[in-house]
Length: 117
Image 1 (tube, helix red, strand yellow):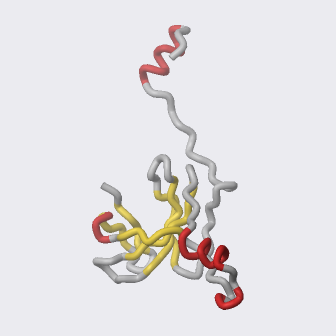
Image 2 (tube, helix red, strand yellow):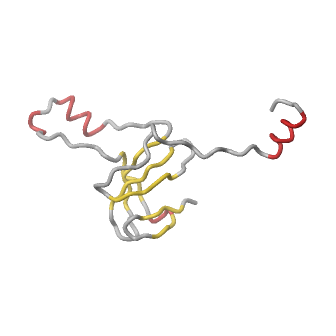
Image 3 (cartoon, one colour):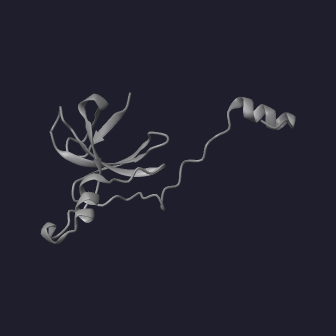
């Protein structure tokens, strides 16, 4: 189970209280009447789905009912940060540096024995 930090409530709450609403930071065309059908269709229907760091829009549906953004790693499901609407993320795919992983006991033993895992 995830615990998600709501930047408005200031608390970590269970994931069941929240609902994802799609990609964050989608800019609506300034003049929709001047858009081509392709441009409007791209805005309405096409979203990024990267492998790695992704910014998502979520709502605290059972709590304060406010929308906020989450920076999440789509492979590990790790939530890297949460931030209020209108704020910019401090972590991007270019600036993300995962924590150094420690080798497991079996990997360490194999290394000491000179065996490749």
